Length: 209
Image (cartoon, helix red, strand yellow):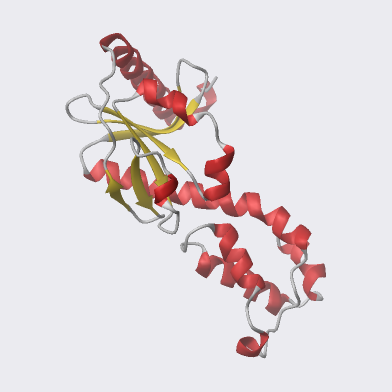
């Protein structure tokens, strides 16, 4: 990223540091793409010793995927912390029988299964058409989004969780639709095998397939 920034700001490393530090400070406030746009709109008079030239469009386009990816990872961490505090065991990026991969699947003390779909921003939510399939693989389905996300556009039967890199809060409960016993068993087997394989790969990465 630094290499790409240098020609944009006349090779002044002080300005490079200012850009990176400003983006970092803004990471936790809603969409990370918004953080870059906020930096783009910073008033020069507030930073007379490190004024920045306007950021060109291609800079925002190049950085946007990395920014949104950082938001999703932060939300994932916060949601898993929250679920563990509630007594759930959670796993990220679990493949299911349909061939899809759910962002987070969690199992509670009674065997209740939750799926949490992470959306880093409004564009991400609108572009995704696959999440309705996940309802058939859980008792409750949630969206985890930044606190700045307009929750009123999320379907009423789905739960809503606001999250960041430090934790999460349930804003709306999900409708309960019990799984069929056979599918619950299949999901629990898949969860246990995947978790075991990941742990084994950490302990002995040379045997990873």
